Structure formats: C-alpha cells, structure tokens
Image (cartoon, rainbow, N blue to C red; front, side, top):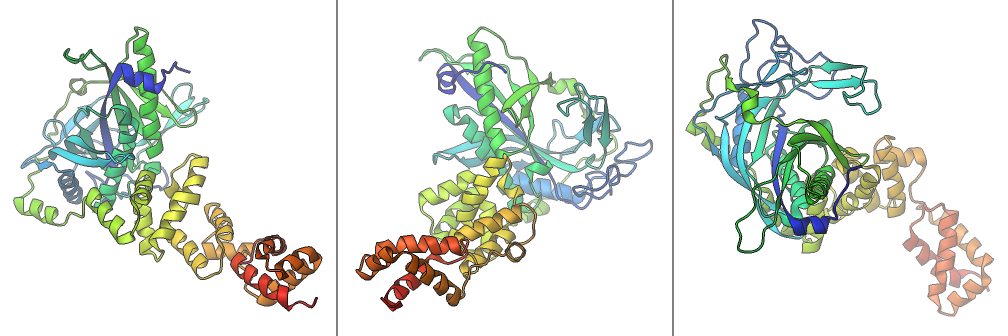
Length: 505
C-alpha cells in the first residue's frame, strides 16, 4: 500500500489543483456514426455494423440527434456554441476500436467557454470553469480472462465486445480548477452530481454510472505553497484517475490522490504523469499507463465527415427548451416541499434529488420520499458499497410509502419489505403477500393477545388501573412480540388502555 500523508497536513503544504473529464453516453436510438442500435446490454457483438467494425469501404454518417443533444448540453453548461466544428481522428492503439482510431473533436469542439455553479455540502457555492464539450464515439469493452485482478496484467487472454463501440459521447472538459482547497474531494463529487442532474434533466442520457453512461476521469496535481508575498510555485505534475464509476468513489479517489502525492513530494520524490486505476474494494489507486499529451494522439481532420454547422434558429430553439438549472431547481423544490435548509442540504449531499423528485411524481409525499431514500436505502447502499439508485426504483419506493400510508405496513414492517424488494423478490405488494408481512388490522386478534398479556401481568394491570399509563409499555411490547411485529403499536396502546378497565377485577 502506498504511503499516505494526513489529509490536513497535506493541505497545509500543498494546494490541490483539479480538472475533470466527464463522458456522457447519449441516449440516441442509434450510434454516433452508424445505424446500429444504441442500447445497454445485448449479446456481445450483436449491436454492430461494418462502420462500427471499421471494415474497408464503410463510411461514417453523423447522427443528427446526437448533435442536437450535444448543443443542448453545451447551452446548459453556459457554453458558446461554435458556428462550425469538425471531427478529427485521434490515433493510438485501440484494441476496442477496430479501425484503430477514435473519431472525436480536437481543436474545433461544438461547445466551449462555459461554467457550472456547484453547491458543496457545507453550503459553499463554487463556479467550475468549463473549457469545452465535444462529441466523439465510445470504444468497445474488453474483458480480461484469467489472473487475479480482472485487468490485463496477468490475464491469459482478452475478449472484445464491440456493442459499445460507436455509442455517441459528449466529453465535458473543465478548465484548471483552483481554490477548492480542503473541499476538493467534496467538489469532485458535487460537480459530477451536478453534471448528472443536468443531463438527466435534459433527457439526453440515463447517466447511470454503474452502467458507464456517465464516467469521470479525475485529474489532480499538487502545488507547493509558498510564503505570503512570494509568487506561486509552478503547477505540479498531474495524474488522471480513469473511469471512476460512482459519486462516492470520485470523492474518495481525489482524497486518496492528495494524500498519496503529498507523501511522495514531501519526501523529495516526483509524481509520474500517468493514468491511474481506482480500486473500490481497497480504496486505492494504482498506476496505469504513462499519460499522453494531445500531440501524441496525432490528431488530423476526419476526411470522411463534413464540418457541423448548426443554424442560429436551431441553437435558439434548443436554448428555449432548456430546463431549469440545477441550482434554481433546488431552490424551487425546497420551497415547494417545505424542507428546512438542513433537510434539503442533506438531500442534496446524498445525490438523490432526482430520485426523490421521481418518487414524489409517483405519488409519495416529499417528506416520506426523502426519509426512505436518505435513510434506509442510503444506509443499505453504503453497507453494500453501491449507489442507492441501483437498489430500487422511485416507483417501488412510492409503492412502499403507499402501503405505509394506508396502514398495510408499519415502518418496521416496511423495512422488511424493502429488504425483499432489494433482494429481487418483486414489488412491495408482492413481498408483503409472499412474506405475510401486512399489519394485523383485526381488533379481535389484537384484543385476544392483549387480554392474555394483561392477565399474565397482574401487577402491570393494576398499575394501569391506578392511572400509571406508562406501565402499558410492558404489555404493548409483549403484544407486539406475540403478533411478530405485525401490529400497529398506536392501536395496540389504545386497546390496552381500553381492556385494562374492561377486564373483570
């Protein structure tokens, strides 16, 4: 394991300098340059055409819907839209792109010079500068077989699936980010969460990190602090942690790299400019390959594609259709839902605002939706080391809330039902039926259990009759145990007090 410096000490000695490259897979029906279907899954190497395989004589054709989505995203990021942009060939060894180059955009991106307002968990607002957003195609997927790590090192052989090759991407590249200081890890998570909110709001991507719809490459370097009054030190050498696939991991990877790089620099070592891989299980990064600079990719204009020249009318049409910015939407929702500052800040920090919105749309109250997503669901996700969005859907949560609201379930029973839903046992109602978890609403059954409990505890019965109603707790506990938790405690209490006076002395 690499040596790490204490985080606070690292911040005393060095200033973290950040940069992010976020890749968004667009939810178009077909791929970026071919008419192959664009959807997640499918048998390997079935969603492909000769263009995706780079076969001789096959020619790319630009997906018009992808261009519209890219312009919408650029506008939502506050970018200027280029009156003309063009594609280029990015060259290096791509085992997962059969033609051995990627069609991307180099010095002529479709969108440039924007910014995004990000709210940090402590309430601080931070402006992230956007250098550019450009269109490109995704690569295929490699599966390395054999070895202990699932990576190419030590593998016996590798398999390639070209289904993802050619999927439309927009890559959002930030400018250099200064000033994050101790908030750097939280800024990383909040920025990626904000980008996810934007693209989901635009309806251009599912942005599910666990599926690779949204991927973040996190760049970080450390600049040694200089005494006050002296010019700043030169920028340090950066590393790029690749394809971090959850919001929690983005935050953890940045914190780890700050501590790792600080320990190396403090001992007089040097940082290698390289890509690094994040390991969720150990919470560490490991060295990948030396990081190439732009000139190493030998960009040159794609000869088979004309420049993209969007009309002013199209740009204004897409601008008029933009949804609320995430910061504005948060303020509106906070007022509509009547949440306190702390309640809404906790929800924002959880990264589950969209899930709560969808749960409310499915019929749940805002308070109940927030309680379940940021409570039991988030706790389960943290325990399993996954995103909460992978466990249940907003519709399932709304159905669970409805069963609590109509008295079918208590909160305690609802937690057991949620466990069953997460385990794949069906909808909340199906889990209730299969496990027999509904609240016992038959007063006759409750009264029988209450009478038995009162008669078995005559001393408690006497105290209740003497007006010491707090003594009823022992009886309520016995009844709830007898009913296996499937009774409404409030109703049991009412009946206990009634039966204490009704039973013969």
